[in-house]
Image (cartoon, rainbow, N blue to C red; front, top):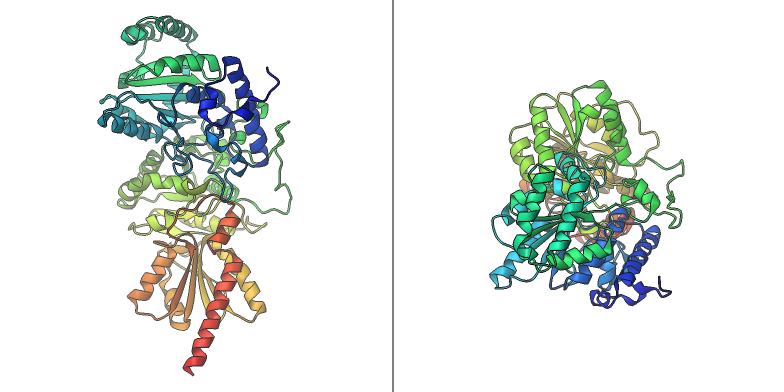
Length: 636
Protein backbone atom coordinates (compact mmCIF):
# COMPACT_ATOMS: atom_id res chain seq x y z
CA UNK A 1 0.00 0.00 0.00
CA UNK A 2 1.11 3.55 -0.60
CA UNK A 3 2.29 5.68 2.28
CA UNK A 4 -0.25 8.43 1.69
CA UNK A 5 -3.73 8.44 3.15
CA UNK A 6 -5.96 8.25 0.10
CA UNK A 7 -9.18 9.12 1.96
CA UNK A 8 -7.73 12.57 2.75
CA UNK A 9 -7.88 13.42 -0.96
CA UNK A 10 -11.38 12.06 -1.60
CA UNK A 11 -14.12 14.62 -0.99
CA UNK A 12 -16.58 13.81 -3.77
CA UNK A 13 -17.29 10.87 -6.08
CA UNK A 14 -15.34 12.40 -8.99
CA UNK A 15 -12.19 12.05 -6.88
CA UNK A 16 -12.68 8.26 -6.89
CA UNK A 17 -12.49 8.11 -10.66
CA UNK A 18 -8.85 9.23 -10.63
CA UNK A 19 -7.75 6.25 -8.51
CA UNK A 20 -6.42 2.93 -9.76
CA UNK A 21 -7.69 -0.43 -8.46
CA UNK A 22 -4.91 -0.79 -5.90
CA UNK A 23 -5.68 2.67 -4.54
CA UNK A 24 -9.40 1.88 -4.43
CA UNK A 25 -8.70 -1.19 -2.33
CA UNK A 26 -6.58 0.88 0.04
CA UNK A 27 -9.34 3.48 0.19
CA UNK A 28 -11.82 0.81 1.29
CA UNK A 29 -9.57 -0.10 4.20
CA UNK A 30 -9.15 3.53 5.22
CA UNK A 31 -12.88 4.20 4.93
CA UNK A 32 -13.68 1.17 7.09
CA UNK A 33 -11.23 2.30 9.78
CA UNK A 34 -12.54 5.87 9.61
CA UNK A 35 -16.06 4.64 10.39
CA UNK A 36 -14.83 2.31 13.15
CA UNK A 37 -12.97 5.21 14.82
CA UNK A 38 -15.78 7.74 14.45
CA UNK A 39 -18.62 5.49 15.62
CA UNK A 40 -16.54 4.37 18.61
CA UNK A 41 -16.60 7.97 19.87
CA UNK A 42 -20.00 9.05 18.53
CA UNK A 43 -22.32 6.01 18.63
CA UNK A 44 -24.38 5.05 15.62
CA UNK A 45 -25.03 2.13 13.28
CA UNK A 46 -21.83 0.16 12.84
CA UNK A 47 -22.26 -3.36 11.45
CA UNK A 48 -24.42 -2.55 8.42
CA UNK A 49 -22.08 0.25 7.37
CA UNK A 50 -18.94 -1.86 7.59
CA UNK A 51 -20.59 -4.43 5.34
CA UNK A 52 -21.10 -2.12 2.34
CA UNK A 53 -17.77 -0.28 2.10
CA UNK A 54 -16.65 -1.92 -1.16
CA UNK A 55 -20.13 -1.68 -2.66
CA UNK A 56 -20.35 2.03 -1.87
CA UNK A 57 -16.96 2.78 -3.40
CA UNK A 58 -17.78 0.72 -6.50
CA UNK A 59 -21.16 2.39 -7.01
CA UNK A 60 -19.78 5.91 -6.85
CA UNK A 61 -16.79 4.88 -9.00
CA UNK A 62 -18.93 3.38 -11.78
CA UNK A 63 -22.06 5.53 -11.83
CA UNK A 64 -22.49 9.23 -12.44
CA UNK A 65 -24.00 10.24 -9.11
CA UNK A 66 -26.07 12.23 -8.24
CA UNK A 67 -27.57 12.26 -11.76
CA UNK A 68 -27.73 8.49 -11.55
CA UNK A 69 -29.53 7.85 -8.28
CA UNK A 70 -28.79 5.47 -5.42
CA UNK A 71 -31.54 4.74 -2.90
CA UNK A 72 -30.28 3.08 0.29
CA UNK A 73 -33.00 0.92 1.81
CA UNK A 74 -33.51 1.52 5.55
CA UNK A 75 -30.58 3.92 5.29
CA UNK A 76 -28.47 2.81 8.23
CA UNK A 77 -25.81 1.54 5.80
CA UNK A 78 -25.16 4.94 4.20
CA UNK A 79 -22.23 6.23 6.29
CA UNK A 80 -19.59 5.50 3.63
CA UNK A 81 -21.89 7.10 1.06
CA UNK A 82 -22.09 10.25 3.18
CA UNK A 83 -18.34 10.39 3.74
CA UNK A 84 -17.63 10.08 0.00
CA UNK A 85 -20.19 12.74 -0.94
CA UNK A 86 -18.87 15.82 0.81
CA UNK A 87 -19.68 15.09 4.46
CA UNK A 88 -16.37 13.70 5.67
CA UNK A 89 -15.45 16.72 7.77
CA UNK A 90 -18.96 17.04 9.22
CA UNK A 91 -19.24 13.34 10.01
CA UNK A 92 -18.25 14.02 13.62
CA UNK A 93 -21.70 15.61 14.01
CA UNK A 94 -23.50 12.49 12.79
CA UNK A 95 -26.80 11.98 14.68
CA UNK A 96 -26.08 14.96 16.92
CA UNK A 97 -28.21 18.03 17.54
CA UNK A 98 -27.90 20.36 14.49
CA UNK A 99 -25.52 17.85 12.88
CA UNK A 100 -25.92 15.57 9.88
CA UNK A 101 -28.58 12.89 9.90
CA UNK A 102 -27.75 9.24 10.49
CA UNK A 103 -29.91 8.40 7.47
CA UNK A 104 -30.09 9.68 3.88
CA UNK A 105 -31.96 12.97 3.77
CA UNK A 106 -32.81 14.80 0.55
CA UNK A 107 -32.54 18.21 2.23
CA UNK A 108 -28.96 17.44 3.28
CA UNK A 109 -27.28 16.58 -0.01
CA UNK A 110 -28.13 16.14 -3.71
CA UNK A 111 -26.41 12.75 -3.43
CA UNK A 112 -29.13 11.62 -1.00
CA UNK A 113 -31.61 10.94 -3.78
CA UNK A 114 -34.35 9.78 -1.42
CA UNK A 115 -34.85 9.97 2.34
CA UNK A 116 -34.99 6.60 4.07
CA UNK A 117 -35.23 5.26 7.59
CA UNK A 118 -37.88 2.55 7.39
CA UNK A 119 -37.39 -0.74 5.58
CA UNK A 120 -38.37 -1.97 2.12
CA UNK A 121 -39.06 1.38 0.43
CA UNK A 122 -36.03 1.63 -1.88
CA UNK A 123 -37.31 -0.32 -4.90
CA UNK A 124 -40.59 1.62 -5.01
CA UNK A 125 -38.78 4.96 -4.83
CA UNK A 126 -36.14 4.06 -7.42
CA UNK A 127 -38.84 2.65 -9.72
CA UNK A 128 -40.79 5.90 -9.47
CA UNK A 129 -37.73 7.97 -10.37
CA UNK A 130 -36.87 5.64 -13.26
CA UNK A 131 -40.37 5.92 -14.72
CA UNK A 132 -40.39 9.69 -14.28
CA UNK A 133 -37.21 9.87 -16.38
CA UNK A 134 -38.74 7.54 -18.97
CA UNK A 135 -41.84 9.73 -19.24
CA UNK A 136 -39.52 12.69 -19.81
CA UNK A 137 -37.74 10.87 -22.63
CA UNK A 138 -34.70 9.64 -20.68
CA UNK A 139 -34.32 5.86 -20.84
CA UNK A 140 -30.58 5.77 -20.19
CA UNK A 141 -30.12 7.17 -16.68
CA UNK A 142 -29.60 4.40 -14.15
CA UNK A 143 -31.57 4.21 -10.92
CA UNK A 144 -30.26 1.88 -8.23
CA UNK A 145 -31.97 0.46 -5.15
CA UNK A 146 -29.69 -1.12 -2.55
CA UNK A 147 -31.75 -3.42 -0.35
CA UNK A 148 -30.64 -5.81 2.37
CA UNK A 149 -30.60 -6.16 6.17
CA UNK A 150 -33.90 -8.02 6.01
CA UNK A 151 -35.54 -5.49 3.69
CA UNK A 152 -36.77 -8.16 1.28
CA UNK A 153 -39.08 -9.59 3.94
CA UNK A 154 -41.10 -6.37 3.77
CA UNK A 155 -44.16 -6.51 1.53
CA UNK A 156 -43.42 -3.24 -0.23
CA UNK A 157 -40.34 -4.72 -1.89
CA UNK A 158 -42.46 -7.48 -3.47
CA UNK A 159 -45.15 -5.01 -4.52
CA UNK A 160 -42.53 -2.84 -6.23
CA UNK A 161 -40.86 -5.74 -8.05
CA UNK A 162 -44.23 -7.07 -9.15
CA UNK A 163 -45.06 -3.68 -10.65
CA UNK A 164 -41.60 -3.23 -12.19
CA UNK A 165 -41.91 -6.63 -13.86
CA UNK A 166 -44.93 -5.37 -15.78
CA UNK A 167 -43.31 -2.18 -17.08
CA UNK A 168 -39.85 -1.48 -18.46
CA UNK A 169 -37.84 0.73 -16.08
CA UNK A 170 -34.09 1.22 -16.22
CA UNK A 171 -33.75 -0.14 -12.70
CA UNK A 172 -30.95 -1.98 -10.93
CA UNK A 173 -31.79 -3.67 -7.63
CA UNK A 174 -28.74 -4.65 -5.59
CA UNK A 175 -29.61 -7.31 -3.05
CA UNK A 176 -27.07 -7.02 -0.24
CA UNK A 177 -27.36 -10.48 1.25
CA UNK A 178 -25.80 -10.65 4.72
CA UNK A 179 -28.37 -12.93 6.36
CA UNK A 180 -29.28 -10.51 9.16
CA UNK A 181 -31.34 -7.40 9.89
CA UNK A 182 -30.79 -6.58 13.58
CA UNK A 183 -31.54 -10.15 14.59
CA UNK A 184 -31.08 -13.09 12.23
CA UNK A 185 -33.36 -13.07 9.19
CA UNK A 186 -36.31 -15.41 9.37
CA UNK A 187 -38.67 -17.09 6.93
CA UNK A 188 -38.76 -18.99 3.67
CA UNK A 189 -37.13 -16.19 1.66
CA UNK A 190 -34.03 -16.49 3.85
CA UNK A 191 -33.91 -20.25 3.20
CA UNK A 192 -34.32 -19.73 -0.54
CA UNK A 193 -31.38 -17.34 -0.80
CA UNK A 194 -29.29 -19.62 1.37
CA UNK A 195 -29.76 -22.36 -1.24
CA UNK A 196 -28.64 -20.05 -4.04
CA UNK A 197 -25.62 -18.91 -2.02
CA UNK A 198 -24.65 -22.48 -1.13
CA UNK A 199 -24.65 -23.71 -4.74
CA UNK A 200 -20.91 -23.38 -5.43
CA UNK A 201 -21.14 -25.10 -8.82
CA UNK A 202 -23.84 -22.75 -10.00
CA UNK A 203 -22.09 -19.66 -8.67
CA UNK A 204 -18.74 -20.51 -10.23
CA UNK A 205 -20.20 -21.43 -13.61
CA UNK A 206 -22.55 -18.45 -13.68
CA UNK A 207 -19.74 -16.01 -12.94
CA UNK A 208 -17.34 -17.54 -15.48
CA UNK A 209 -20.04 -17.52 -18.14
CA UNK A 210 -20.85 -13.90 -17.39
CA UNK A 211 -17.21 -12.84 -17.60
CA UNK A 212 -16.88 -14.63 -20.94
CA UNK A 213 -20.05 -13.20 -22.40
CA UNK A 214 -19.29 -9.63 -21.35
CA UNK A 215 -16.55 -9.58 -23.98
CA UNK A 216 -19.03 -10.53 -26.72
CA UNK A 217 -22.64 -9.70 -27.55
CA UNK A 218 -23.60 -10.77 -24.01
CA UNK A 219 -26.58 -8.46 -23.78
CA UNK A 220 -28.31 -10.41 -26.56
CA UNK A 221 -27.88 -13.90 -25.14
CA UNK A 222 -27.23 -13.56 -21.40
CA UNK A 223 -30.77 -14.14 -20.21
CA UNK A 224 -31.25 -17.35 -22.21
CA UNK A 225 -27.87 -18.84 -21.25
CA UNK A 226 -28.03 -18.00 -17.54
CA UNK A 227 -31.55 -19.40 -17.38
CA UNK A 228 -30.24 -22.66 -18.87
CA UNK A 229 -27.44 -22.79 -16.28
CA UNK A 230 -29.88 -22.08 -13.48
CA UNK A 231 -32.35 -24.74 -14.61
CA UNK A 232 -29.68 -27.40 -15.11
CA UNK A 233 -27.91 -26.92 -11.80
CA UNK A 234 -30.46 -25.54 -9.35
CA UNK A 235 -33.45 -27.31 -10.92
CA UNK A 236 -35.75 -24.59 -9.62
CA UNK A 237 -37.17 -21.28 -10.71
CA UNK A 238 -35.31 -18.11 -9.83
CA UNK A 239 -37.46 -15.82 -7.73
CA UNK A 240 -36.28 -12.59 -9.39
CA UNK A 241 -36.45 -13.95 -12.94
CA UNK A 242 -40.03 -15.07 -12.30
CA UNK A 243 -40.79 -11.35 -11.81
CA UNK A 244 -39.13 -10.50 -15.16
CA UNK A 245 -35.86 -9.25 -13.66
CA UNK A 246 -32.53 -10.37 -15.08
CA UNK A 247 -30.62 -11.97 -12.25
CA UNK A 248 -26.83 -11.72 -11.79
CA UNK A 249 -24.84 -13.26 -9.00
CA UNK A 250 -24.35 -14.05 -6.27
CA UNK A 251 -20.88 -12.50 -6.13
CA UNK A 252 -18.51 -11.51 -3.34
CA UNK A 253 -19.60 -8.07 -2.15
CA UNK A 254 -16.17 -7.40 -0.64
CA UNK A 255 -14.20 -7.89 -3.87
CA UNK A 256 -13.84 -4.35 -5.21
CA UNK A 257 -12.49 -5.46 -8.59
CA UNK A 258 -15.36 -7.87 -9.28
CA UNK A 259 -17.92 -5.30 -8.14
CA UNK A 260 -16.52 -2.63 -10.45
CA UNK A 261 -16.41 -5.08 -13.35
CA UNK A 262 -19.99 -6.28 -13.08
CA UNK A 263 -21.42 -2.85 -12.24
CA UNK A 264 -19.66 -1.42 -15.30
CA UNK A 265 -21.31 -4.12 -17.41
CA UNK A 266 -24.74 -3.68 -15.86
CA UNK A 267 -24.54 0.07 -16.35
CA UNK A 268 -25.15 -0.44 -20.08
CA UNK A 269 -27.68 -3.27 -19.77
CA UNK A 270 -31.12 -1.68 -20.15
CA UNK A 271 -34.24 -2.66 -18.23
CA UNK A 272 -34.83 -4.50 -14.96
CA UNK A 273 -31.82 -6.15 -13.28
CA UNK A 274 -30.95 -7.68 -9.93
CA UNK A 275 -27.39 -8.04 -8.69
CA UNK A 276 -27.09 -10.42 -5.74
CA UNK A 277 -24.02 -9.78 -3.58
CA UNK A 278 -22.88 -11.66 -0.49
CA UNK A 279 -21.48 -9.53 2.34
CA UNK A 280 -20.60 -9.87 6.00
CA UNK A 281 -22.26 -7.48 8.43
CA UNK A 282 -19.49 -5.87 10.49
CA UNK A 283 -16.84 -6.79 7.90
CA UNK A 284 -13.27 -5.98 9.00
CA UNK A 285 -14.01 -5.53 12.70
CA UNK A 286 -13.76 -8.88 14.49
CA UNK A 287 -16.17 -8.12 17.33
CA UNK A 288 -18.77 -6.77 14.91
CA UNK A 289 -18.48 -9.85 12.70
CA UNK A 290 -18.83 -12.28 15.59
CA UNK A 291 -21.58 -10.47 17.52
CA UNK A 292 -23.61 -8.92 14.73
CA UNK A 293 -26.77 -8.15 16.72
CA UNK A 294 -24.89 -6.34 19.50
CA UNK A 295 -22.72 -4.40 17.04
CA UNK A 296 -25.62 -3.31 14.84
CA UNK A 297 -25.65 -0.14 16.95
CA UNK A 298 -23.31 -0.86 19.87
CA UNK A 299 -22.99 2.47 21.63
CA UNK A 300 -19.48 3.51 22.59
CA UNK A 301 -16.67 0.96 22.25
CA UNK A 302 -12.89 0.72 22.12
CA UNK A 303 -11.91 1.21 18.47
CA UNK A 304 -8.88 -1.07 18.84
CA UNK A 305 -10.28 -3.99 20.84
CA UNK A 306 -13.97 -3.61 20.07
CA UNK A 307 -14.84 -3.92 23.77
CA UNK A 308 -18.00 -2.06 24.71
CA UNK A 309 -17.71 0.89 27.07
CA UNK A 310 -20.51 0.46 29.58
CA UNK A 311 -21.57 3.86 30.86
CA UNK A 312 -24.55 2.40 32.68
CA UNK A 313 -22.81 -0.39 34.55
CA UNK A 314 -23.49 1.34 37.90
CA UNK A 315 -25.69 -0.89 40.04
CA UNK A 316 -27.74 2.13 41.12
CA UNK A 317 -29.13 2.47 37.58
CA UNK A 318 -32.78 1.63 37.04
CA UNK A 319 -33.91 -0.88 34.42
CA UNK A 320 -34.92 0.02 30.90
CA UNK A 321 -38.62 -0.06 30.10
CA UNK A 322 -37.83 -2.66 27.45
CA UNK A 323 -36.25 -4.97 30.02
CA UNK A 324 -39.18 -4.60 32.40
CA UNK A 325 -41.57 -5.33 29.54
CA UNK A 326 -39.68 -8.46 28.47
CA UNK A 327 -39.34 -9.90 31.97
CA UNK A 328 -42.95 -9.07 32.85
CA UNK A 329 -44.26 -10.72 29.70
CA UNK A 330 -42.38 -13.90 30.55
CA UNK A 331 -43.75 -13.77 34.09
CA UNK A 332 -47.31 -13.49 32.76
CA UNK A 333 -46.76 -16.14 30.08
CA UNK A 334 -45.59 -18.64 32.69
CA UNK A 335 -48.97 -18.31 34.39
CA UNK A 336 -51.15 -17.99 31.28
CA UNK A 337 -50.49 -20.44 28.43
CA UNK A 338 -52.73 -18.44 26.07
CA UNK A 339 -50.20 -15.60 25.92
CA UNK A 340 -48.14 -15.36 22.73
CA UNK A 341 -45.64 -12.72 21.56
CA UNK A 342 -45.30 -11.23 18.07
CA UNK A 343 -42.64 -8.85 16.76
CA UNK A 344 -41.58 -7.67 13.29
CA UNK A 345 -37.82 -8.38 13.44
CA UNK A 346 -37.26 -6.73 16.83
CA UNK A 347 -36.78 -9.67 19.21
CA UNK A 348 -33.70 -8.29 20.94
CA UNK A 349 -34.68 -4.61 20.65
CA UNK A 350 -38.03 -5.28 22.32
CA UNK A 351 -36.49 -7.62 24.92
CA UNK A 352 -38.55 -10.56 23.70
CA UNK A 353 -35.44 -12.73 24.03
CA UNK A 354 -36.62 -13.79 27.51
CA UNK A 355 -39.90 -15.06 26.06
CA UNK A 356 -38.23 -16.60 23.02
CA UNK A 357 -35.75 -18.58 25.08
CA UNK A 358 -38.40 -19.90 27.46
CA UNK A 359 -41.31 -20.32 25.03
CA UNK A 360 -39.93 -20.44 21.46
CA UNK A 361 -43.15 -21.97 20.12
CA UNK A 362 -45.16 -19.03 21.53
CA UNK A 363 -42.81 -16.29 20.26
CA UNK A 364 -43.17 -15.22 16.64
CA UNK A 365 -40.60 -13.09 14.81
CA UNK A 366 -42.37 -12.45 11.50
CA UNK A 367 -39.54 -10.47 9.90
CA UNK A 368 -39.83 -6.86 8.74
CA UNK A 369 -43.55 -7.14 8.07
CA UNK A 370 -45.56 -4.90 10.37
CA UNK A 371 -48.82 -5.24 8.45
CA UNK A 372 -48.62 -9.01 8.61
CA UNK A 373 -47.65 -8.90 12.30
CA UNK A 374 -50.84 -7.02 13.19
CA UNK A 375 -53.24 -9.16 11.15
CA UNK A 376 -51.45 -12.34 12.26
CA UNK A 377 -52.08 -11.19 15.84
CA UNK A 378 -55.73 -10.65 14.91
CA UNK A 379 -56.02 -14.25 13.75
CA UNK A 380 -54.43 -15.51 16.95
CA UNK A 381 -56.81 -13.41 19.07
CA UNK A 382 -59.81 -14.62 17.08
CA UNK A 383 -58.97 -18.21 18.03
CA UNK A 384 -58.63 -17.52 21.72
CA UNK A 385 -54.96 -16.67 22.16
CA UNK A 386 -53.80 -13.50 23.93
CA UNK A 387 -51.30 -11.84 21.59
CA UNK A 388 -48.85 -9.24 22.86
CA UNK A 389 -47.78 -7.50 19.64
CA UNK A 390 -44.57 -5.56 20.32
CA UNK A 391 -43.82 -2.91 17.70
CA UNK A 392 -41.83 0.33 17.81
CA UNK A 393 -44.11 3.37 17.59
CA UNK A 394 -42.53 4.63 14.38
CA UNK A 395 -43.04 1.23 12.70
CA UNK A 396 -46.62 0.81 13.92
CA UNK A 397 -47.48 3.61 11.49
CA UNK A 398 -46.94 1.09 8.70
CA UNK A 399 -49.86 -1.07 9.85
CA UNK A 400 -52.52 1.59 10.37
CA UNK A 401 -55.14 0.05 8.10
CA UNK A 402 -54.67 -3.35 9.75
CA UNK A 403 -55.23 -1.82 13.20
CA UNK A 404 -58.49 -0.26 12.01
CA UNK A 405 -59.86 -2.95 9.69
CA UNK A 406 -58.52 -6.20 11.12
CA UNK A 407 -58.39 -5.38 14.84
CA UNK A 408 -60.61 -2.53 16.04
CA UNK A 409 -63.53 -3.04 13.65
CA UNK A 410 -63.78 -6.66 14.76
CA UNK A 411 -63.13 -5.89 18.45
CA UNK A 412 -60.28 -8.39 18.60
CA UNK A 413 -58.33 -8.19 21.89
CA UNK A 414 -54.80 -7.73 20.61
CA UNK A 415 -52.47 -6.09 23.12
CA UNK A 416 -50.23 -3.56 21.36
CA UNK A 417 -47.00 -2.93 23.26
CA UNK A 418 -45.81 0.26 21.61
CA UNK A 419 -42.09 0.50 22.22
CA UNK A 420 -39.92 3.63 21.70
CA UNK A 421 -43.00 5.85 22.02
CA UNK A 422 -42.25 9.56 22.10
CA UNK A 423 -38.87 11.15 21.48
CA UNK A 424 -36.17 8.54 20.86
CA UNK A 425 -33.23 10.86 20.22
CA UNK A 426 -30.36 10.47 17.79
CA UNK A 427 -32.14 8.43 15.10
CA UNK A 428 -34.08 11.58 14.23
CA UNK A 429 -37.38 12.24 12.46
CA UNK A 430 -37.78 8.84 10.81
CA UNK A 431 -37.74 7.15 14.22
CA UNK A 432 -39.32 9.60 16.69
CA UNK A 433 -42.46 7.95 18.07
CA UNK A 434 -44.53 11.10 18.10
CA UNK A 435 -47.71 10.13 16.25
CA UNK A 436 -49.16 6.98 17.86
CA UNK A 437 -51.42 8.73 20.38
CA UNK A 438 -52.82 10.97 17.67
CA UNK A 439 -53.45 8.26 15.09
CA UNK A 440 -54.88 5.73 17.55
CA UNK A 441 -57.27 8.05 19.40
CA UNK A 442 -59.88 8.41 16.61
CA UNK A 443 -60.20 4.62 16.20
CA UNK A 444 -63.34 3.20 17.84
CA UNK A 445 -63.05 0.28 20.28
CA UNK A 446 -59.44 1.12 21.22
CA UNK A 447 -58.12 1.30 24.77
CA UNK A 448 -55.04 3.56 24.82
CA UNK A 449 -52.76 3.80 27.85
CA UNK A 450 -49.31 5.09 28.79
CA UNK A 451 -47.65 4.22 32.12
CA UNK A 452 -45.88 6.84 34.18
CA UNK A 453 -43.33 4.25 35.36
CA UNK A 454 -42.32 0.59 35.20
CA UNK A 455 -44.70 -0.50 37.97
CA UNK A 456 -47.63 0.94 36.08
CA UNK A 457 -46.36 -0.73 32.89
CA UNK A 458 -46.44 -4.11 34.65
CA UNK A 459 -49.93 -3.52 35.99
CA UNK A 460 -51.27 -2.42 32.60
CA UNK A 461 -49.82 -5.56 31.01
CA UNK A 462 -51.41 -7.66 33.75
CA UNK A 463 -54.76 -5.91 33.32
CA UNK A 464 -54.75 -6.21 29.53
CA UNK A 465 -54.46 -10.00 29.62
CA UNK A 466 -57.20 -10.60 32.21
CA UNK A 467 -60.53 -11.13 30.45
CA UNK A 468 -59.48 -9.16 27.35
CA UNK A 469 -62.39 -7.84 25.30
CA UNK A 470 -61.02 -4.93 23.23
CA UNK A 471 -57.72 -4.00 21.57
CA UNK A 472 -55.48 -2.54 24.25
CA UNK A 473 -52.50 -0.24 23.48
CA UNK A 474 -49.74 0.31 26.04
CA UNK A 475 -47.09 2.82 24.96
CA UNK A 476 -43.79 3.31 26.73
CA UNK A 477 -40.56 5.19 25.93
CA UNK A 478 -37.04 4.24 25.03
CA UNK A 479 -34.74 4.31 28.01
CA UNK A 480 -34.77 3.79 31.74
CA UNK A 481 -37.56 3.93 34.26
CA UNK A 482 -37.51 5.47 37.73
CA UNK A 483 -37.77 2.61 40.25
CA UNK A 484 -35.27 0.04 41.50
CA UNK A 485 -37.99 -2.06 43.12
CA UNK A 486 -40.15 -2.29 40.01
CA UNK A 487 -40.97 -5.98 40.39
CA UNK A 488 -43.96 -5.52 42.66
CA UNK A 489 -47.03 -7.79 43.00
CA UNK A 490 -49.47 -7.26 40.14
CA UNK A 491 -52.46 -4.98 40.67
CA UNK A 492 -55.48 -4.60 38.44
CA UNK A 493 -55.79 -1.13 36.88
CA UNK A 494 -59.27 0.32 36.55
CA UNK A 495 -59.64 1.15 32.86
CA UNK A 496 -60.31 4.83 32.22
CA UNK A 497 -59.37 5.91 35.74
CA UNK A 498 -56.75 8.61 36.40
CA UNK A 499 -54.44 8.59 39.43
CA UNK A 500 -53.87 11.55 41.74
CA UNK A 501 -50.15 12.16 42.25
CA UNK A 502 -50.16 15.40 44.25
CA UNK A 503 -52.70 17.87 45.61
CA UNK A 504 -52.58 21.62 45.18
CA UNK A 505 -54.78 24.67 44.82
CA UNK A 506 -52.86 26.86 42.37
CA UNK A 507 -52.68 24.97 39.09
CA UNK A 508 -53.68 21.58 37.66
CA UNK A 509 -51.39 19.46 35.49
CA UNK A 510 -52.61 16.42 33.58
CA UNK A 511 -49.82 14.15 32.39
CA UNK A 512 -49.79 11.04 30.24
CA UNK A 513 -46.96 8.52 30.34
CA UNK A 514 -43.36 8.88 31.45
CA UNK A 515 -43.51 12.68 31.03
CA UNK A 516 -45.38 12.72 34.34
CA UNK A 517 -42.02 12.25 36.05
CA UNK A 518 -41.00 15.68 34.83
CA UNK A 519 -44.13 17.04 36.50
CA UNK A 520 -43.22 15.29 39.77
CA UNK A 521 -39.78 16.90 39.61
CA UNK A 522 -41.27 20.31 38.80
CA UNK A 523 -43.83 20.00 41.57
CA UNK A 524 -41.08 19.51 44.15
CA UNK A 525 -39.38 22.71 42.95
CA UNK A 526 -42.63 24.68 42.92
CA UNK A 527 -43.47 23.52 46.46
CA UNK A 528 -40.34 25.31 47.66
CA UNK A 529 -41.86 28.53 46.32
CA UNK A 530 -45.24 27.75 47.90
CA UNK A 531 -46.91 27.05 44.55
CA UNK A 532 -49.11 23.98 44.89
CA UNK A 533 -49.83 21.69 41.95
CA UNK A 534 -52.75 19.30 41.55
CA UNK A 535 -51.14 16.61 39.41
CA UNK A 536 -53.03 13.73 37.81
CA UNK A 537 -51.41 10.83 36.00
CA UNK A 538 -54.16 10.22 33.44
CA UNK A 539 -52.92 6.67 32.64
CA UNK A 540 -55.50 6.35 29.84
CA UNK A 541 -56.00 8.58 26.84
CA UNK A 542 -59.00 6.47 25.85
CA UNK A 543 -61.32 6.10 27.65
CA UNK A 544 -60.28 9.25 29.47
CA UNK A 545 -61.34 9.98 33.03
CA UNK A 546 -64.06 12.58 32.52
CA UNK A 547 -64.79 12.75 36.26
CA UNK A 548 -61.27 14.08 36.82
CA UNK A 549 -61.55 16.42 33.83
CA UNK A 550 -64.81 17.86 35.16
CA UNK A 551 -63.27 18.38 38.61
CA UNK A 552 -60.21 20.11 37.16
CA UNK A 553 -62.13 22.39 34.80
CA UNK A 554 -64.50 23.39 37.59
CA UNK A 555 -61.85 24.18 40.20
CA UNK A 556 -58.83 25.54 38.32
CA UNK A 557 -58.41 28.50 35.99
CA UNK A 558 -55.06 27.28 34.61
CA UNK A 559 -54.62 23.71 33.35
CA UNK A 560 -51.48 22.22 31.78
CA UNK A 561 -51.33 19.01 29.82
CA UNK A 562 -48.07 17.23 29.02
CA UNK A 563 -47.44 14.24 26.77
CA UNK A 564 -44.43 12.86 24.91
CA UNK A 565 -46.36 12.90 21.66
CA UNK A 566 -47.94 15.19 19.09
CA UNK A 567 -50.00 17.95 20.66
CA UNK A 568 -52.36 17.78 17.71
CA UNK A 569 -54.50 14.71 18.20
CA UNK A 570 -53.28 13.45 21.56
CA UNK A 571 -54.05 14.33 25.20
CA UNK A 572 -54.04 18.06 24.51
CA UNK A 573 -56.65 17.67 21.78
CA UNK A 574 -58.80 15.41 23.97
CA UNK A 575 -58.77 17.97 26.80
CA UNK A 576 -59.41 20.90 24.45
CA UNK A 577 -62.39 19.08 22.96
CA UNK A 578 -63.73 18.37 26.46
CA UNK A 579 -63.40 22.04 27.40
CA UNK A 580 -65.22 23.19 24.27
CA UNK A 581 -67.87 20.50 24.47
CA UNK A 582 -68.77 21.50 28.04
CA UNK A 583 -68.25 25.27 27.67
CA UNK A 584 -65.62 25.59 30.41
CA UNK A 585 -63.66 28.82 30.70
CA UNK A 586 -60.14 27.81 31.62
CA UNK A 587 -56.70 28.55 30.26
CA UNK A 588 -55.33 25.35 28.78
CA UNK A 589 -51.58 25.19 28.10
CA UNK A 590 -50.50 22.13 26.09
CA UNK A 591 -46.94 20.83 26.41
CA UNK A 592 -45.72 18.20 23.99
CA UNK A 593 -44.46 17.85 20.46
CA UNK A 594 -45.61 20.70 18.16
CA UNK A 595 -46.61 20.38 14.51
CA UNK A 596 -43.07 19.66 13.32
CA UNK A 597 -40.87 16.70 12.54
CA UNK A 598 -38.32 16.49 15.33
CA UNK A 599 -34.69 16.27 14.21
CA UNK A 600 -31.90 14.29 15.87
CA UNK A 601 -30.32 15.01 19.24
CA UNK A 602 -30.29 13.41 22.67
CA UNK A 603 -33.65 12.86 24.35
CA UNK A 604 -32.68 15.41 27.01
CA UNK A 605 -31.71 18.04 24.43
CA UNK A 606 -34.89 17.55 22.44
CA UNK A 607 -37.19 17.60 25.47
CA UNK A 608 -35.53 20.86 26.49
CA UNK A 609 -36.07 22.38 23.03
CA UNK A 610 -39.67 21.18 23.02
CA UNK A 611 -40.32 22.67 26.48
CA UNK A 612 -41.18 19.36 28.09
CA UNK A 613 -38.69 19.06 30.95
CA UNK A 614 -39.05 20.05 34.62
CA UNK A 615 -37.41 23.46 34.19
CA UNK A 616 -39.85 24.44 31.46
CA UNK A 617 -42.82 23.19 33.46
CA UNK A 618 -41.70 25.30 36.43
CA UNK A 619 -41.30 28.41 34.27
CA UNK A 620 -44.64 27.86 32.54
CA UNK A 621 -46.48 27.44 35.83
CA UNK A 622 -44.82 30.47 37.45
CA UNK A 623 -45.50 32.68 34.44
CA UNK A 624 -49.16 31.76 34.35
CA UNK A 625 -49.62 31.99 38.12
CA UNK A 626 -48.15 35.49 37.97
CA UNK A 627 -50.47 36.44 35.10
CA UNK A 628 -53.44 35.04 37.02
CA UNK A 629 -52.53 37.01 40.14
CA UNK A 630 -52.04 40.23 38.18
CA UNK A 631 -55.38 39.76 36.48
CA UNK A 632 -57.03 39.15 39.85
CA UNK A 633 -55.53 42.37 41.25
CA UNK A 634 -56.71 44.36 38.22
CA UNK A 635 -60.21 42.94 38.56
CA UNK A 636 -60.35 43.83 42.25
